[in-house]
Image (cartoon, rainbow, N blue to C red; front, top):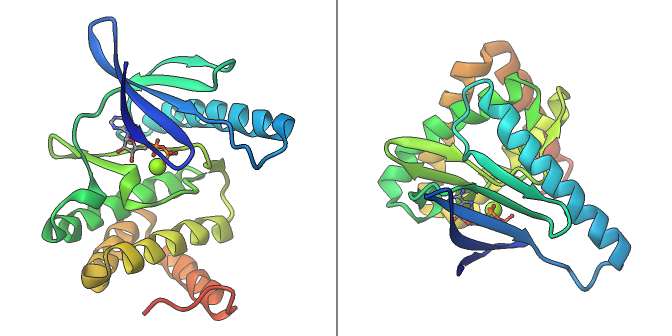
Length: 206
Ligand SMILES: Nc1ncnc2c1ncn2[C@@H]1O[C@H](COP(=O)(O)OP(=O)(O)O)[C@@H](O)[C@H]1O
Ligand SMILES: [Mg+2]
C-alpha cells in the first residue's frame, strides 16, 4: 500500500478493493491526548464519518462510496475520487466552483447536517462534479448557530488560503448557498455570521 497523503488527523493510502481503486484513511494516535480519550475520539470520528458520508448520499450529495469500516484500526476504506482538491485548482476555477460549493453546503444544512470542517481541501473536483469528504467532525443539527459556524469557517479559509480571490469566491459561495436554503434562512444565517464576527473572538473578515 502506498502512502498517498498525510492529513491533519489521518494517513491516507492508495489501495484497491475488488478491482476498484480505493483509499484507506487511518486515523492516527495523537500522543498529546490521554490514550483512552484518544481511542474514543478516533472511534467516534470514524463512525461519524462513515455514517455521514453514506447518509448525505441519500439526498444527492456527491461523496465517495464507503467499502469497509474497521473500528479496531479506526480506518475507513472508501472509493478513490481521483480528482484534485479544490484548494489546488487555479484561482479562476476556485471562484467558479465556489457557487457549487455554496449549493452543496446549503443542501447539507437544509438536511440538518453541519460539516464541521469546511476547507477547500475537503472538496474534490472530479469529472465536472464537486465531491465532499472528511465528515469526521460533522453533526446532525438544525441549529442555525451551528450552520453559521460552518459558513464562518469557510469564509475564514477563503480569506487566509485564497486571499486574492476571497471577495469573488465568497460572493459566489453565498449566491449558491442562498439559491438552496432560500432568502429567509440565508438572511438569518448571514446575520449570525456577522454576530459571531462582532463578538470579537474572531476577527471580522472583510
Ligand atoms: N476518497 C478520497 N479520494 C481521493 N482523495 C481523497 C479521498 N479522501 C481523502 N482524500 C485526500 O486526502 C486528503 C486528506 O483526507 P481527509 O479525509 O480530508 O483527512 P483529514 O481529516 O486528515 O483532513 C484530502 O484533502 C484529499 O486530498
Ligand atoms: Mg481534510
